Length: 476
Image (cartoon, rainbow, N blue to C red; front, side):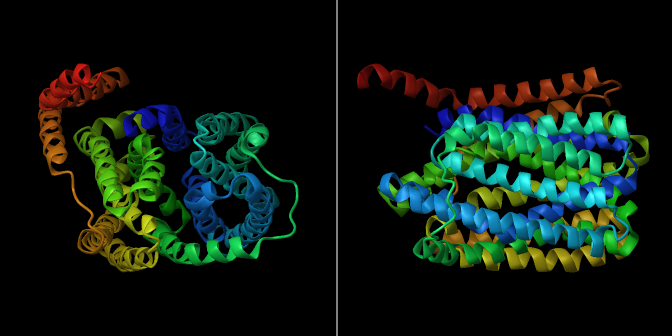
């Protein structure tokens, strides 16, 4: 079931993040460091606002919306509308304030309006996507994941060509595309036009479940993004723009890899927890993690082995030197955090022990701030990137230690051994290749590495596949 659901979600999980990755590369060729710094800091700010003002409700809906069906649906939808309205209003005010106080004190009115529109529409897309996952509405989820990044990127390119390189035009392109994605699915998702009366029982339950997630999520955001703002504070927005390319590419690459398999995974673990209990849910999480690691491991090693040709062929020359140093470190920290978020931390969500997430995220966030300041002061931008690896590793260590000791979490050792051997085989092949002189050669190197990895896995899993095929006629 996990593999089937993963394949159904695959287009959404791949296309949307891929366009985000492509956008980061293309912007280096079209805008300067200052504009790119504003873009990345605004999107990072929205991630924090989403955590603080809406993620608590999104996580509650993902975990408990299935209980509010039939007669209870109307009271959930009324409360949902009120929460969304308050949330996007507060987020709009906050992003304008942060722009003027922290990111770009000289920001023009157009950037303020575009940033607010981006925040509102992006929040709606993310929330609608989470609701769609609960009800297995894969088409709705796919539209939310794909339309904004893909169509928004295209509109942003057009606006830049027509009106100039200012940061408001890419933001406006994304906002228009995200609004379109939200409006087109409204007839399919089930909603109400009423805002009142708000159900206090639902809000109370959501807050009790979600407040630890707000704190933990905000701390997680600090771990992920503090280095960007520290660089901005210590060296200016242009330096933040230089840092953003390598750091953003590494984080996006890890996220793209992880999202290929994570959309279907957690709802299956929730269903297992509800129907069969904690022990079965932990086994499901272990199975989920094997698929996640099978994607992350070759992606991470591939980026490291091909880092020179990736940077020299894809990134504009002014950004290349810094990106080459930062990219593998950012990909490593991104892989660690994705593994923690989609494996270790999900134990706490399943058992409604979300306070543990605050502790884990506090470790990550605190060490990110401390290490980033020290790392940047003594080793520059690469030091700030290395600091995120050390902090991510510390947070993941705490998360997994608690999961193993208190909740019976296990590792799929047999699967991990096969994955490690296949990744080593892939790395050995890639090491033989000279640096690719063209994009076609780079694509060939990537294809050869992927083929070696998959072929090795096929050989290692052959006995299991043969046993499965032999058992099917007997079961019939």
